[in-house]
Amino acid sequence: MNILVILGHPQPGSLNHAIAEQTVETLRSQGHQVVFHDLYQEGFDPILPSSEIPRGAQLSPEVLRHCEELTAADGIVIIHPNWWGMPPAVLKGWVDRVMRVDVAYNFVGEDGGEGVPQGLLKATRALVFNTSNTATEREQNVFGDPLERIWKDCIFELCGVRDVHRRMFNIVCISSLPEREAWLAETRDTVRRLFPADQSSSA
Image (cartoon, rainbow, N blue to C red; front, side):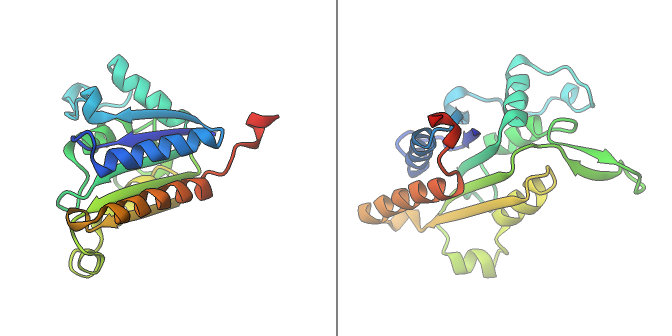
């Protein structure tokens, strides 16, 4: 399988970076082809210019490459911290610029607007790893688990990816080294379970 892995965290050496490294290493050990982007390290520009908004707009080579990688992916892994119940701006900008109409979705029929959205992505499964300093109970009961709604309902399902999994690791700021090691082991096991070994690679 061809798996796209996107990391959105500004600090090298962070738990998010360790999760990304574990994810990429595990996927490759399973025989998958991996396309990995560290958006901060690469300096991805999150600002959507007005020239990119129209359908059929001319895209920069960088954004075009990201679009092509997204449409080619059989699976997608997203890794980022929970900031105000949202992804970091660089990752939100990646969604704005890359998960665009006629790439990730289009519209069919008429409903008084542009029509009913239809997902275009061929990826059958998505996995989202988040880190947070908010307790799970508060995240769900007080805030309504906004990252679940954003990734599962607002983004992936609209773009045609129905099998969406998310794991939140918390509370990071008071976590111990053994806890972080356990989280990385869980990351490895989750990736192995959701993206099992590519049997075709050993043929």
